[in-house]
Length: 435
Ligand code: URA
Image: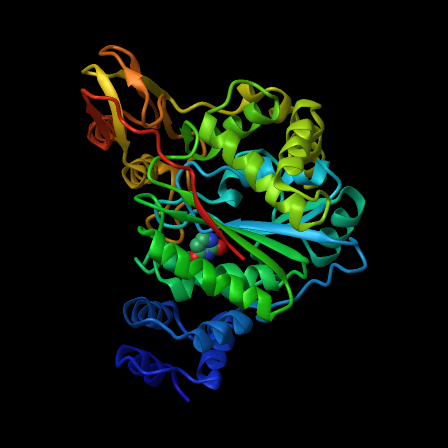
């Protein structure tokens, strides 16, 4: 067997065998297959797709490329949630501590930024000292001790996804249903959580642009999880405008902290996080109904227990929790400027993909695998679609590391906003549940 034949087979729209999929994953993970061949295969998969059987086999090969963690001796029942990727999506930083504060163990493996979509691990690394490359023992002990833990892919955990993920980020091979499903589900299956909630984003700033595509991705992932004995649910949620107000790594951590401290919060972010928490609480049988879950989640927030839980988790993973108490400590970008609306009217659109790409250009994401990111840069959008606005009101604020990127971002962000004279509809937040 050789890699060139496997690439050609997928290029010619043929189905790969289990042996070929395993050969690719084993040899890419151990470094025998170079990045350029893996990139060629990823592009062939993106262009020609994989059937359900191939995706299931790719997922299993990836999830078994490193250690698998059996949580049964460390938590009676554990849950996980994962988003397919969006702009301003800091929900994990809020939902994970809320659910853990309600007494349900949450064990999570997250990723870095992918294309124009941010990643939880990059956001967390804004906090000095935090470690996300936990050993097996550290992961399991922390789960048992404080009921919540988060890690990235590592040499030990889902290493195949770690390598492929970084490659897809910079080779235009992200928006493939087969590659997204296998990437997400391989991470989820490498850790034996009992229940998994998937947040499948739909719209301009999502990898799935239509409800139909998002639904088929959701069904594919739910069926892989079910087949492997997990309690599965997927919610389809809007990603036409950024979620919340802030986009960029440390800015998003600050926005998450603000919600956890019950400070004024963007309405879409609040609703999304409380709703996802309620879904997880119901999946864990902590509550009977979603309404009870909403109440329980709100109580975890208002009592301050969710914030304390986040501090406990970050502290346990070496992070400096004084930044959580005093977010003013996060280093600021050298250039911070607010731009005003040039006309009055109603906001009809804030193009999430454009905002996400602008954040990458500011230095918040990567163009090459070896790029480092600037945690300080990003964007604050001051409104949501549907808001009325007057000329001169703040429209967006840019946090940049130099004047050149600030000027480019300003132009792109004005173009990303559409303001119309007549009232514009507030966007729906959810488009259904798959289970
Ligand atoms: N999240 C992942 O972990 N992988 C993807 O491919 C997309 C989102």
